Amino acid sequence: MALSPVEGALFRRNYVREPVPLPDSTRARQRFYLFFQDFLSEDQQFDFANAVMRQLGLEYHHGGYGYRHDHFWKKEDVTDVLSGVTLVLRGAKTNGKEGPALAAARRIISEEGLHYRIDDAFGVHYLVDEEFARVSEAALAGLGQPRFAAASHALDDALSYLDPGRQSEKALIRGVFEAVESAFLVVVNQPKVNRLNAQSIDAHLKPILRARHATYGEAEDKVDRAMETFKAWVHSAHPFRHGAPLDQIHEAPIDLAVMSASQGMGFLRYLVAP
Image 1 (cartoon, rainbow, N blue to C red):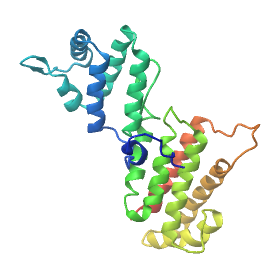
Image 2 (cartoon, rainbow, N blue to C red):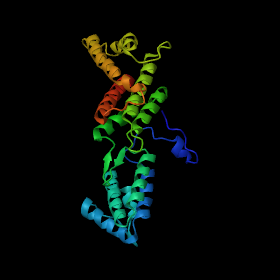
Image 3 (cartoon, rainbow, N blue to C red):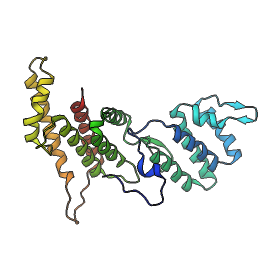
Image 4 (cartoon, rainbow, N blue to C red):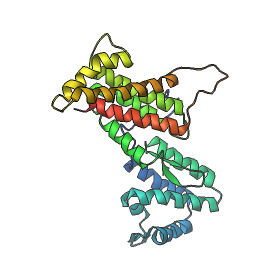
C-alpha cells in the first residue's frame, strides 16, 4: 500500500517516486552539497577537502578562491560522494550537530529514492546488499511497459519497506507478491482469473510458457519443473498476505524476507520477459 499524502508536504514528496531505486541522483547530490555547507564550518570544510585527499585518494579541485566543494559533490563518483557523507557526519559530531545531520542525510536518501541506508555510526550501506540492489533495479526496469504499471508501483512500494524509517519485512513480502500477481494477471490475460495460485498457474501460465520455449528440447518438462518452484514460492508467501490476532507478531525475519523478495523478483523478471 502506498503512503497517504502528508498534509502540507511538497508535491514531489507526496506524489513523485523514482520508478527504480537509484544508485545516484543529481537532486540528491545538490542536496548533499547544501547539507555539507549547513553542518560544517568553513574550517571544517577545509579539513573535509584534506580528508578526501588523504582517505579517498582524490585530487580535490581548487579554484581561484579556494577548494571547489561543489565539484566534489556534483561531479565525483557516487562511491566518493557517499563516503563524503560519512566524513561530513563525523565532522558534525565534533560540533554537536550529529543528530540533526544524521536525520538530514537519511531524509535526503529516502526522499530522493536512493537504495542506501546510513547506520548509527555514520556508515553508508546498500539497503540490503549490492546484489539485491542489482536484482531490484533489473526487476523494476523490466516493468517499464505501461501495461505493467500496477506491478511496477507495487514493487516500488514493497522495496520502500526496507527503508529504516518504515521497515517491515511482512510488507516487503506482501508487496513483492502483489507485484508478481499483478504481472501474472496481465500476462495470462484471463478476465475470469483474479488471483495467483497453483491452479491458475497450471491452467493459464504453463501453456504460455510451453509455447514460449517450444523450440527447446523437453520444453514441457523444463516449464513444469520451473512452475513447481514458482508454486512453492507462492505458497511460502501466502501467510504474509493476511492479518493476524493482535497478540501475535506477524513479521518475518529479515533474511527470510530478503530471500522471498529476491525469489519473487526473479519470477517477476521471467514473467515479463519478451
